[in-house]
Amino acid sequence: MNFLKTLFTIIGIILGVIIIIIGLFLIIKPYGIDLMKVIPVVLEKEKQSSYDHPYLNVEQEAILESAGINLEEIPTEITLEQKECAISILGEKRIEEIANGSTPTIMEILKIKECL
Image (cartoon, rainbow, N blue to C red; front, side, top):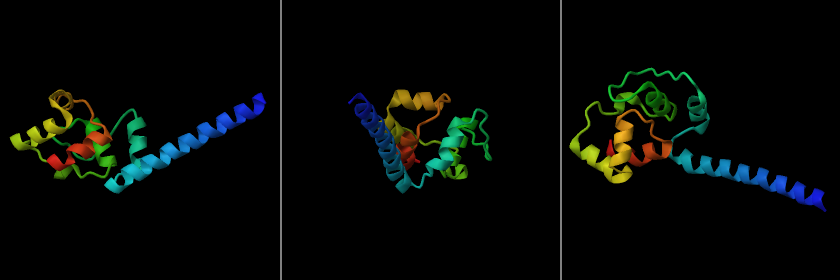
C-alpha cells in the first residue's frame, strides 16, 4: 500500500510540474516572449548585450534582449509621464530599485511596457 501511495505522489508531482510549465508558456507566449531564450540568459553568470543603453546595466539589457525587446526602441530620456505611469503600476519603491540597477522581472517588464 505504501508503494502505491509513493508512486501516485511521484506521478502527481511530475504532472503538477508539467502543468505549471505549460501554463507559463501559455501565459508568456502571447506577449512574444520565448522562454527558451530567456531561461539561459537568466542562468548565465556573465551576461552580454549587443547594445549599450544609457539607463540599463548589462544584466537588464541581456534579459530584455532575450525577451525579444529591441533596446534601441527603449527611450533614452524618461519623461515625467512615463515615470508616473511606471510608478502607478509598480510603485515608487520598486521603480527606485530598478533605477538603481535592480533587474526587473519579466512580469514587471510586461506591466510597464505600455508606459514606454
